[in-house]
Length: 453
Ligand SMILES: [Fe+2]
Ligand SMILES: [Zn+2]
Image 1 (tube, rainbow, N blue to C red):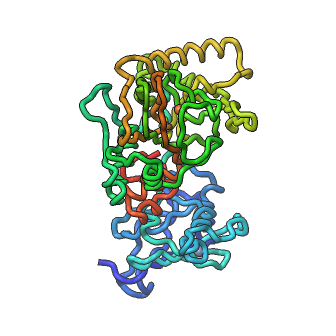
Image 2: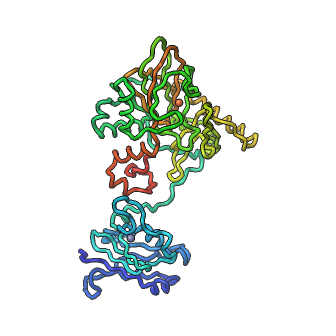
Image 3: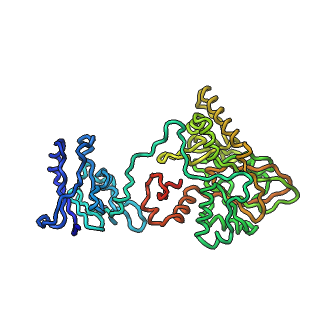
């Protein structure tokens, strides 16, 4: 049993002179006073003998003792500049706001370590060559997210986060109750879990009025305002010049392809439908459709992932809204890399100029294939909305549409932003501390809150 603090002194001379020798020296790691007979060398190496790093990378890299250093496992190799910049002391990270307050760009680029003290179960203290004494809690080093970058596979370069898909006509679709969601955060969590897992969820027993419906949305986050307003309450009167505000058939699409940042969630609540019928709601699982596409023709999936398309919303005199750049149909997360977003709206697609004729034919063929999958009867989930049952769905995944209708319908609803939805979902699913401890984590494991994209 080892007791007392662990002292790990870096004589920079010693390290420099040892480089290039066969068999790198093990830094002098001592427990307690150097004079006691209990001190011993621990098998941490500054860098491994077979390291392929060049001299510069070598001098910029450090491994620290692990909190459970009796396990003989050194920490991963950290860049010194990174480690200094990510000091966890209250002078570097504001304890209340959690914001970085260290003057990152004043840190000398040749920053080095002078001394390391590792008291058991306490933050490791690192004395830096700029005079700062840094603190690194064991959990910080232990949960190190340094790992090989996730790479897409070569063929069929789309990968999927876990999700489940509903079968059209199945007995029961994901449903929660209004009173439960309004009463407890646990029920909100179950609600969001349903939306994330299945792509949509009904909320039964919703009071048939706009105020109650708005309050329901606010259980997740504030409502996303757009040029259509915040919370909508509308009839088919073309108040906004968009097909959604007519009584015509609407094919399966995602909303907001004309935004750089489309809304993540969309909720509809039918308040009334008088003197007519029709207007059934359509949902199609875009992830499932993308999976089928990739299985049937991986090249088509690649084309829809790579080729950006322009989009616009210009129906009203005072707007012409377009996204910052041309986005592809399949949005792939850069770091994971998993499919996380479908942008599919042929109504709002605008004119693409920057492609060759061959590229055009390739894209249209891939898009035609995807469109054909979306229209397969075993993909189309048709339901009839009723006053009292709200429908919410993931606009990054589920395509929606509706059949034509007659008579007068009054519908209300609204959007929720992606970031606000994910913040609420992750914090309900995991403890806040666990969420904060995983900031920046790209590991594809269930325990990582940021795996939920
Ligand atoms: Fe829509
Ligand atoms: Zn600090």
